[in-house]
Length: 415
Image 1 (tube, rainbow, N blue to C red):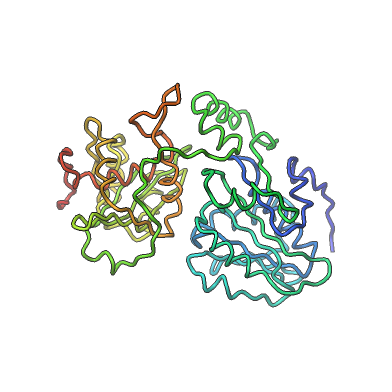
Image 2 (tube, rainbow, N blue to C red):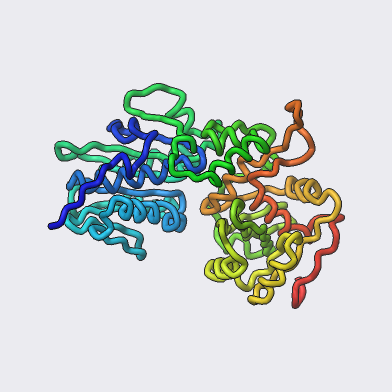
């Protein structure tokens, strides 16, 4: 067998030595954008799964469908970076990775199918490690406790049980802060990292953070430095996470909105229902991705099963709307009008918002969408220009129901 010698620090980089060496039950890393937390975690798992033949890994996110473009891809990247991709077999259906020499597994699960999480077995070795990516999405500590219990039993000598949680620290009131960061525990490593430990960022990457520091200091504290987000003055407090089915919304009207994005902002598709009698808005589904061309938006909408839906999109991009119509989507331009943001917010505030648990990006946005402050720290009657992509899409979707709003341009074939 051919061997290849690599110098691990050159491949992994700096800033994570304590993380790399820790063997307690819980490793929790909150970090800013570009802090290498997910990439470093992926490298650690590939390296150590190969180092310890009896080990196996469970990778979890709140929703299964988000795993492919995050952890699954990061672990494939880690194999390439460590020059061991030829030793691993990654399968898409279901998501799974196997270390060929031994048969060890990386298993992927979503909390949207709890039965598959609580009944996990491996055929080679033991399940001893778990990774929860975007752990902020777990709004309930009980969900984590259920996961924690899935790694149990006696281990062979040399192995240890450990959960690794990686997250962006949007909200200081999240249970993760109280449980892991506020109370010292020798069995817990809770650290904060940021982009400054990422030696592979180029000048353009660094400029994004410098611009954020100057233009949006509040966001820079969280997305730049990895500090906990201080959430005061939420725009919407009339919401809750709730399971529901399409049978529950049969008597409701469909509402769908689209906010465009590309490089720095995601394209955000809101899929929902409105019950005007009972004053309820049901948030059913979402598409939330960066780097989508209009063609890719069309493909994502179609793949998600919403190609025939009537969608209200941001009127600031008429060319994009025309292009989506050309692909066959039923898209109408929003009619914003004077003070349309506050008018739409006031309308939505009169409704109870029920959010399906799979809408993880919607939950993140609505739990961080706050009223802005002036330079003296006084709250003003304008929401922040952040965490607002799905919030705007929801607002577009209800325009035609809002009293006193301008008449919406009709879709081809009517509204």
